[in-house]
Length: 187
Image (cartoon, rainbow, N blue to C red; front, side, top):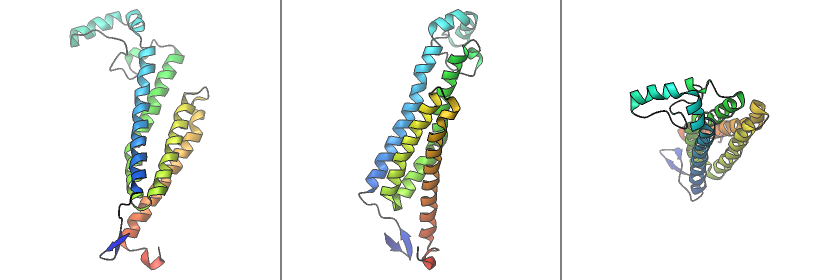
């Protein structure tokens, strides 16, 4: 690290490449989690389901948009008016897939920001925490989609939250250290 007017400033090292790589992998994992909803969506909102349950609505939609309702029933997210005829297992499968994707999207901005900022000062540690975060995300998603349902996501949830808090702490520590206020404490 170099000092600029007495402040501890980060210097990018080759190790920051680990941070960049892990951050890219986190965004890929998020994208794949979101894309995985489509498989469930098109399975439960099949063309047969549309034709069997919503032919009148399909005709109304065609008048509004020029196209009838199709497989996937866009824009219904799985909780809308076209999900009321789904079986409970199909409704659960779709909504759990939507929820795991939604949860990742709710956290992606914060985790990427914390990963990139903490990585300026602690690149290897931050990259390692990012890797653990990805494992936690995987466990969260697969656990939630398992027969255990909401309880199946707990291990992944704990890992994700611990990683989030660790990256937050590293980022805050680094920011405060940059101000020079920690020098009197020898930090």
